[in-house]
Length: 294
Length: 294
Image (tube, rainbow over all chains, first blue to last red; front, side, top):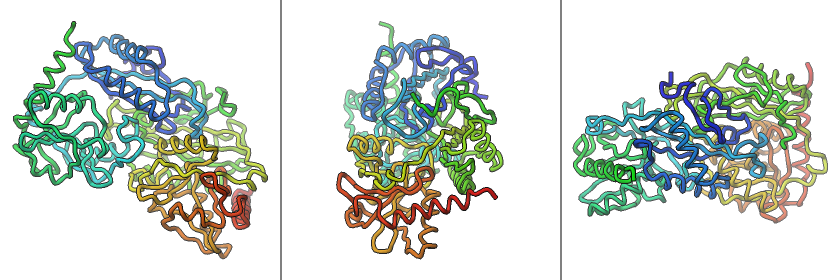
């Protein structure tokens, strides 16, 4: 049913590697009872991770901000590598989830047990070149997100707005939902950050608009500067999409994917634009350099 | 460590009654991975529940609104009763949690397995009369909630704002956090609904302000009318707390608890006021009538 997640798949749970069917989360885990958890999604390239330290630093910073204990970086690194190795994977998508663990079944922020650390890995095959050329169709969601939420900027498990928006998007024949905040400004895609190209200027919603500070978003901003492009983080409203020459989405797994239509209307060239392609290839080259064996 | 939730405690999980230590939630449960779940908290009186049908109807309506499958009412009723009985409890606090179950570890709204239904029961001893007379101290949280969130009005596991607010409140020596929405209007307490008394008028934040439509809140509004009091659901700003003659909090477990101070300053009489006491006793009488053996 879930081809990549058979019961034989090995997961890491609290220091142990064990088959999925034997991995038990407690019904008292406050990640389950109260949505109190954080996660990171990373992609392995030939068994190595692109900017793993940025992911682990973001997790640790968010845990601190949200009052959650976080295992040290060595524990996290070992958990991630061991899970990859136990599943015999080199090209993979990997999810690391952290919750404060068990506590009495009331929302009590004072008495948690040992944190829950879960790592799941799945084989990953990237989209074909033709899929990148075609790009994704976006759908602007009617579900608003809240830029002043305590979750804003943190990768928590609070995904209900994104699940509902994604359901709308799929029903509309799109691949990704795009979310606006309480002011109507664009924030992000359901699982991606958003970039627009107009003139030789690249722009992406500012962190104040509520997007996740994506590791790939950060790398794209660096890359743009190194390629001599002007890059801006600012407030962007949906009307700008109609005027954009190109747009693209990005995250750690998908890398850079052109956004070629929004709400059923072609965006820019209606296929991957030249600057998007240049950034996609530039990002891939950056990944190759940084994940090359020393 | 959690005196009411020892490993020997019996929980209901997907049709089975089993010791807590043997109850296994899957690491692929989207209640855990994506905070996609709903719950209800009920109190048992002599083994019977007050307005159980309202709780079950709210759960079913929220599940429908949020695109989640929900077991039928007979299954839910049996799960609740069986859990109570298996633990030999008559006076109890009971939590029923529903998630869409397992799916691949990406936020995919199309492919869920069987819903997860979990019921947990704990013995409950209500506060003493002296505690009700003393009341609760409230703390207005700096954490805003979002009245236009898709969760607003639904009892989802999205509790991070409430956990953070509750942490602030406890640190400030208060018992309960009070939350304002994005406009600064009062919405609710962390686990309670809020009522104010001024003149002979009872008021509570309107549903448009973002509170949960509590079963006890609804019963209090009925009770007020039957006692000849005027009751209003409206937008209420925090400044009104200083002018209120009385205020109280309510939920299905705590019933009616006076709010006798806010942010360190006494509210009204600084102890349970006469109207609060009348409603608390009226509510208890209503519960006694409706939960009496036929």
